[in-house]
Image (cartoon, rainbow, N blue to C red; front, side, top):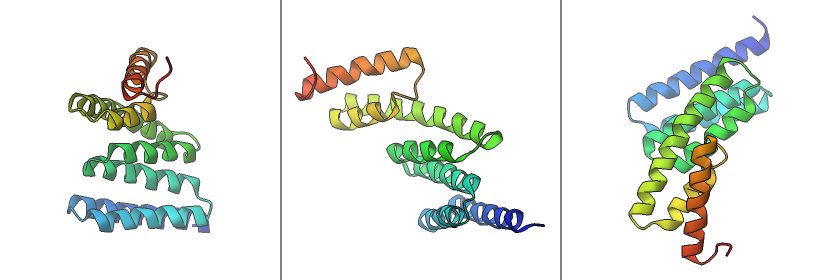
Length: 152
């Protein structure tokens, strides 16, 4: 087994141990472990490891209810997966996260948190399919006009 394979296996094992921590509800410890995986992957220029860690952090952010943070993590993950199954899985998760963010934005708007809705809508508009993106773009414009910082 060469050094890169050995490193990759070790980082995957640490990532899996962090997943076990998530299952136990030990989110802070899991987050630290995922960040260690990411840091070590960056140190050794193991891009897939960075992607793997960020997918895990995106899932953890979703569990914690921080959708905006999940969007950031999954977008970083996609950048680091060269191709193949990991990238496809990251795209699938990105789609789920974007739909959750859209729903959360709609709920924020309903409850009067227009700035929160705007933040989420702006963060995901580039991810949405064309039809949804058109609707969200119109809503972004409406919110900005209502808040007084839109284009007339």
